[in-house]
Length: 267
Image (cartoon, rainbow, N blue to C red; front, top):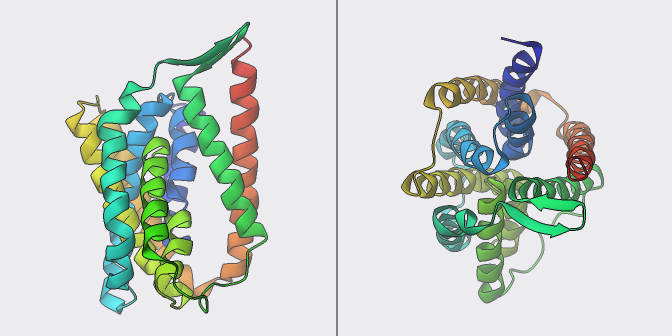
């Protein structure tokens, strides 16, 4: 095992730790690790990420359900449309994207680079909101359900494309459906992340995605250890400082992805 793989497996622990501490962000960590440390194609890494996030998020969800933090009304309203759209994306749409997504002169944008570009821009937006958070929406009036429905479908399609559970996107939507404390929103979001990721991975299985089960099982086991550690120390750390640190880390990873993928298109 070379140094890059050792760093990659260490990153698997970090994937779970982030989910356990913040209720989201696991895919944003796991996909670059899978692609750059282990050489997995981005379109396959997004599928692997769904199982990794589903399993690790499940551990956190069980704990939150036991504590009574999950709000099932908001879960139903936000969850079903996203579940349907993420399944459609993973089962049908993502496999119809051509291997060469766009070409102009010496510039060729491949399917894998396209997915990584989308992921990087998503990470930048999330990182910005973690570093400079917006005021809490717990006192806001619920939005019309039609608007919630459209947002849920879009989130499902987007997270299906990039292989994420959508935790950081779902939290504002949950708060728009039903005003609640932030810890309840993150707990409800984590359950949705579990369901979204599971349904998305089922779509991959039905589309006959080739899976290295031994490698994926090792990565999942390490991530699970990380999430249990994150849950155990979540109440002992400064959440505001932690989110800001992770925001800067995510921003750095996103910039690295953009630089690496842009330069690779001109080789």
